Length: 508
Image 1 (tube, rainbow, N blue to C red):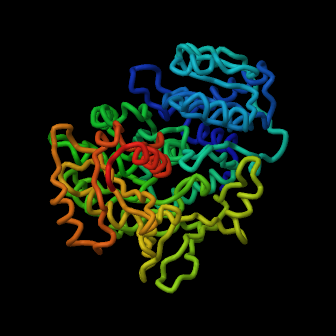
Image 2 (tube, rainbow, N blue to C red; image 1 turned 90 degrees about the vertical axis):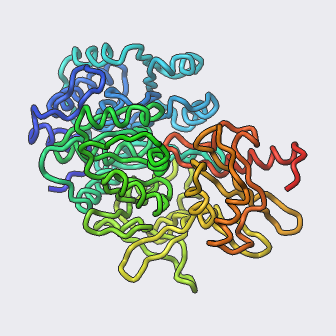
Image 3 (cartoon, rainbow, N blue to C red; image 1 turned 30 degrees about the horizontal axis):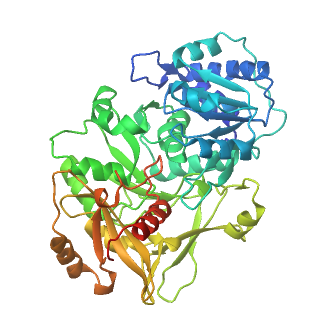
């Protein structure tokens, strides 16, 4: 049976798996069964009614990864309200911008967001100082079975805001059907083991990466999930893997890069597979990681506008350097190009409904039912999809088009470099000059720029080699700016560097 709304899915999972544990808590607090999730959802409906939050009203959360955030994610949407999650580390201006755009009827914030929320006026607020007490408070509400006013599969489920790397963030509107169609496509393609397994969410639940594989997939299939906060997740990652016998997790490429950079010896215990997306993973690092830890990394590709994953490697269909093949219920094609490269176009029921209050941009992005992704790629003869770069990341130097990844795939493998980004800085003669900004694996390391030049000259054309190399410290940065999901904010970095080099006396 195809299920296309959250209420039906939660009830179905509760009936099928009942007293099986769904949500494991790393801090020794009460675990939740599938039945507990259904009861919480129904009692949360009573809470919403008390607060006079009607169906289709928006509920905003400003909460970090936690048991409560998982419960709210499922319960807000499951009761036919619209889920609007905000990263709690967002600045006040961004929070105010999102609230102004969405006009939620209720804001629920955790202890760490209190000061930000207190200053916000004209919104109904619930400040959760103790998450466990608030959860118990919900469980003490009267039981009021949720009754949908109508078939809700095409209703708005959530509004996710993009990282805002190109200005104010865009609100991506997703329906129940968009989300659950995508979840079904992921399940059909990845074919998870049927026996009871444990998932771990280390990526944010206020972005789609943390919502799908580590949360919705175990809900649908009857497995368990555990969540840890993104900012401290890597520090506790190995401990949690061992403690909860984790079998599957979803990460970003920066997580893989970080684990590979650690010199200490450690094991990944019972981990079977890691799913990696959000940014391109260098295949040399992928090979290094798999050889060292004997754990498969299955790379994938998707956007917020495709709900989540649109193409993925599987345990049986893998090709290093690719992002696998399209999900079985998704169609992907490449816009025509003489060199077989072109823009990636995606079609399916997982494609978002619209951008919030921006029909012009929606119509520009969705053409004849295809999402124009703005990503450049190609299919090989066996149907594997390869991502070259973002079209808008392209740097033009003296009439030659250069994509940052052409440089970064080599510099990210140089000993001493943790992460690097190639950036185009305006030049009166060549239009742009490429500079490389990098994070060091250790502050004590001093990199030899001649060594970087030698590595690049062996692998790429001379005109693609950066003119200058700078560590983050040399340009006044602690690290390369990233979104909460660890995606590199290239536009933000470029804007910072444009300003920095204008003010500095550094000769480029």
